[in-house]
Length: 317
View 1 (spheres, rainbow, N blue to C red):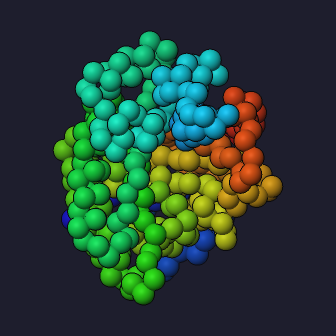
View 2 (cartoon, rainbow, N blue to C red):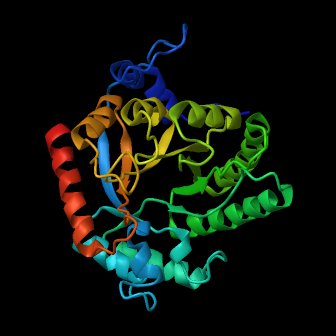
View 3 (cartoon, helix red, strand yellow):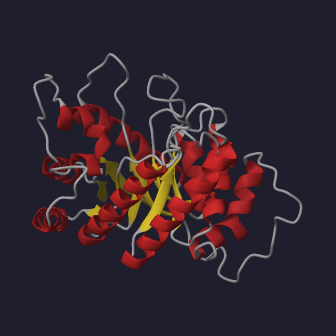
């Protein structure tokens, strides 16, 4: 097995340890180690991005329920208008998903993003590596491989995968075993194509920092990390965010740390301080969700949340 990548190792060995202590996370004896000579030389660098799932309703059933009224190309225009630095185009919204789009479409998408001054911060698919059905897992590994190739073609540095939902009566340790094997296979393929594989804490098989870190350590591959979903560490969000940060390769920053139906807003100053103290350098894509029974205008909701995020970046970062 390969070692952790340099950024995760850097974070773990230096500022990340201070963040965990400040957040109340207890490290086992012997966990601390000498920081490398480069520790602390680079300040945090936080780049804005929009996860396309924010426009899920508009790109599926539309605000009037009669079909899509936006495409991914429209989301590119929106991101440019709102001065995002990047876009995270979820795979579901590409033509023909779960099949990968044509090379021509990927090239057109990549060129339009370039013309608008936008980077592509990542992409993502649906998969389930928690199922006991080995045939289904194998099919999802192949799905991930096809989309890793698509990510490479459009210049997305990270692809987001799920762990999956645990089935009743299936032993968790058995799931960890085959899930780690499948994710390792994906990470190997990702390395071949220059695409980092990130597994998201999606409130499914992994619900907290300990479970997430255990999975990453079982995979033990330099091209496998975590897509840190700030809305799905619901029992102890801020300490869990700090604990998982050394393994984090991208984000989904949600409006609430307690799920889409919660009225409790994330403490953005506290969140950004965790990132700054750890020296995180990378994208922080936001993802706004639609609470059950509502149909808000996301063209209003997204800029409102992004304004809060940018103010926190300015105050803290």
